[in-house]
Length: 67
Image (tube, rainbow, N blue to C red; front, side):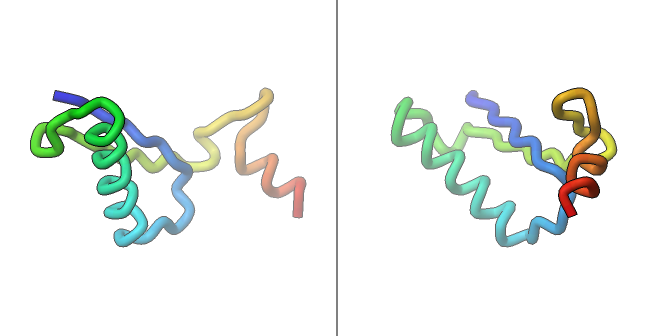
């Protein structure tokens, strides 16, 4: 049973966009690895930008600085 974990920052992703991610990730495993879509699990985790760090600082700080 394939398990796909997609982690994204929590920034207004719509239910439709999430559904598209689930469909696309499932299709990728079917097309590339021949996996059964009925047993492919996709989990989307939304992470607050305060809880996601890059280069020693949070995404919140990085994005604030760029504005």
